Image 1 (cartoon, rainbow, N blue to C red):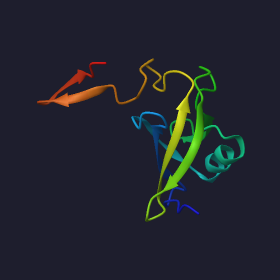
Image 2 (cartoon, rainbow, N blue to C red; image 1 turned 120 degrees about the horizontal axis):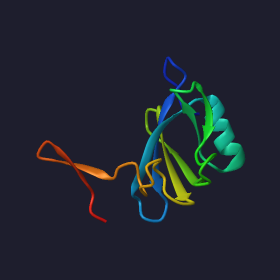
Image 3 (tube, one colour; image 1 turned 135 degrees about the horizontal axis):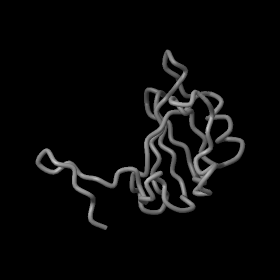
Length: 110
């Protein structure tokens, strides 16, 4: 089983199961991991709200989890997911929609 840090969290990197693109990074606690395993949809721990949240609970843009990979230290996960719409709250397909180019953030050309 994954090993949680002193705050009861571990890092979860979400990638698109089809393309391999990185969609988002979030944190999971035991409750989020269990909810994800039980439902097949990605759940995370919101540090700002201090509670469990299901990705897409308000937008409908859920993440169907195809596979959960655990790193060698057991303190991080990669979730291979099929997104049901944009992953980022800004409406972008990925939360990583900008590139740092010579010290300036530029929107990724799609």
